Length: 446
Image (cartoon, rainbow, N blue to C red; front, side, top):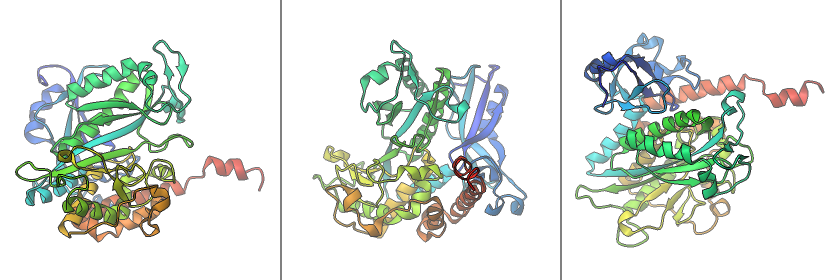
């Protein structure tokens, strides 16, 4: 519990559309006022481009006088930041308009809007997240190039090869992972299994399911922050970038979800392995909305480097039972735990928006009673329907998203407009840059 009599500071932050944290560092004696009145920030902050610049085309800046929103704490107390050099706490917040209504461009409020629609149907989503990241040499952030870490604990060797599910890799980083678990417990983040993944220094930590999607999003945001903070404390760097190494596995973000009725029954469970029609409705809706939602699942230029055949990232809107080549997997499990695993997103995506897009797609299918094609039993990279191929270009995904009437209906017109504007501005900025390979290839030869 935060003691306002302490002299330590605290960070209050919101999450912008790119998943970057924006906020203020405040003195301890301000904590009471923050919980009573919130903190003002310009609403346009949530619509910044990736580098923190205003997006003048989004309608939030000059047209509104760059008005403030009110950032209110999500929980009822601040939580410690144990990795900080100076004693400090943090408060996660969400933004409201000055009149007290939810601000439609706050990613957490976008998710809240979809959850509210499920509640109106008497349904509660249960969600769990799996996030992959690379642990890197401590100089990687300085050099702006990824390099695998050195296993310093009795090993002294640099990781260089793929060693999936290796226990030795985790043994060599035991102090780091011990602190990750400790801080997760302190901050209320339900960390479960830790897995060594396909790339050198790549790991996945699964968070346990919760019957509150907003809490699942909060926990994913806090998890990403604590991994980066603890890695720096231990002399490493870490990244949730979708594809930091050209020839190594990308970082994925898988989401598991099911739905409970008002009696607490899983509406996906029919007592068999195939699941109910409601499960199939949700699958069909997710397949239908997946191309339009790709900008949420893959929001950056680098995001699209994950999507290639055989790279453990789906290239088709597809589904199947216990099949890891499809986009939507129904895992083998006890019937009561029948669920859908959404396998498209990269770890660079905003967790709130990913959960919102997943739930929106499922709800669209349930409300319209859609039914999916037959499940794929083999290799979805080979057997996928060419008409269901996912966009693999950033600009194409942006235009599909911007023109999606379904996403406007379920996620909000204001959000679709502002997110599209941010992505178009980012694309313009990047396209204006001359890359290293252009200089290396052409400068002396043309």
